[in-house]
Amino acid sequence: MTKPTMARDELLRLLARMPFLDRLELAALSGRSRGAVYAVAGQLEDAGLVRSLRHGTELVAPTRRYRLTAAGVRRLADAERVSVERLLQEHPLAARCQRALLERLDAVAALYRLAVAVSDLHHPIGFRWYRAMPADAALVLPDGRVVAVVRLGGALDRTAVAKRLSRLARGRQPGGFLVIVPDETRLRQARRLLRGGHAPAVLATERSAAWASPSDPAWRLPGTGAAVSLAEAILRMNPGGALPIEEPPARLSLPEDFDTEDRSSKGTPDLRLLPARLRPAEKRALDLLADWPWLSLGHLAGMLGVTAQRASQLVTALEDHGLARVVRQDRRRLVLTDAGLTLLARRDRAAVGLARRRWSTAPAGDGSDGGNDDWRGVSGRRSRQLLRDLEHTAAVHGFMAALARQARQTGWRVEQLDPPHRASRYFRHYGRLRSLQPDAFLMLRKGRRAHPCFLEWERRAVRPATMAARIAPYLRYYSSHRPLDDHGASPFLLAVFDDPIAQTHFLEVAGREMDRLRTTVPLLASSRELVQREGPLGRAWLIPGHWEPVAPLNRDD
Image 1 (tube, helix red, strand yellow):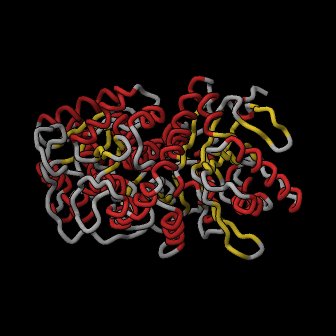
Image 2 (cartoon, one colour):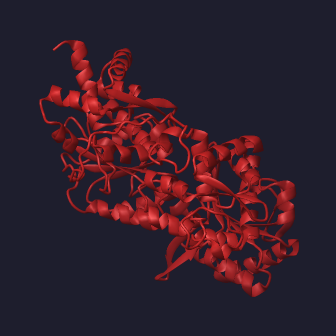
């Protein structure tokens, strides 16, 4: 067998195990030069054995990803001297498997970046995808160690994360786990859940896992939270370990042929193709609309950091794909369609039905995505709650958009903008399960300085008894060790009132309650008028015992 033939067969085998690799990843995982891989990939595509598609995300640069065609599967079966059916059983080549990977293409790209980083340390590695296991994939190192990879996407709520991680302890155990999470808050939640596990685990945010080099201390240990590099994390894994086993799909049909760049079809969107058709900026807008239903175009532009014209172009693109729509309420509001919710749920392996029951904006009792001016007619219960008090919802949106704009102007980086359903915190206080239910959570960073903050936008807390009830959950929370455990620093509590007089009354009530319970809450209070004039990072805040506005979120010390 000639060297070119060996190279072609090797790349076919690699694409059989790992569909949708790009050429740089093929070069790193195969150990061949980039020039050789580029040449062979072009030959395979010209011969109709592979097809490529465009793909990019906010974290992974735009590239072309490759997969085997039906002819490529037959060619590999001949080269391996096995039946086509056996190849379909052993690798994710069946039409159903490729469709599932295509729907999860953003997650696939992040996991391939991690696989390449591991391959730089230990070459060659084996790789196996899973469809329904708690782990997304498993890596097999040259010394026989098995490392399972778990990605927890942004569409998963706290309960889903807890259930997924609890399932890792069941069945055959690998030598360890690499766990990828969307942000620091969920990293800390996952750390608590993984303490004392049967197999070693390390965690990293998806941004760190995608961008860090193998020697960067981007990974955290569950117990201590100490930062370690990927190289150190792999050394901590147990020797050996069992490779999780999953039954092959029931239907073993050859891969389908499709053109992700053919945008001529109208009507119902083909969700499997959209992860390849959407551009990174469109995906970012899609995620923001999922987090903040009923956004106005101006608020979306502020959160994205683009002009209103650019935001309008992104929304139009999402509308053309059937993923978003404009609803007329007090003004034009933006929401995801059921197709948009489904796309994100499948990307993150979340329950599609649950996502729709919570967040659908379709009329109740009707599967269509039509407009509805009455909040009672919206089918998703959480979307319905936000629409019911739209003035409050819009005020929170306006604050977060203004904060994002001002942060960019003053050199701060907005690391997190969490909506109410992700801003909640659950903790135990004197044996009882308690919770915070803020209107939002945000994390600002400049260099090594980080400012986590809870936001409470108050419209009804005007009486002393109501104000005391509002501060009570925070007094319980800050009397425990959980603020530091959850965020690494004690978050500010930002309380904004419609009435300027209410802010001073709230500070007085909160001050008395803090003195009574001997607990300090880092409280900042302001009014709508003051925040709109000075901006969230300006001299818009009062602190207990001081009545001159200060700018504690934008100090240079």
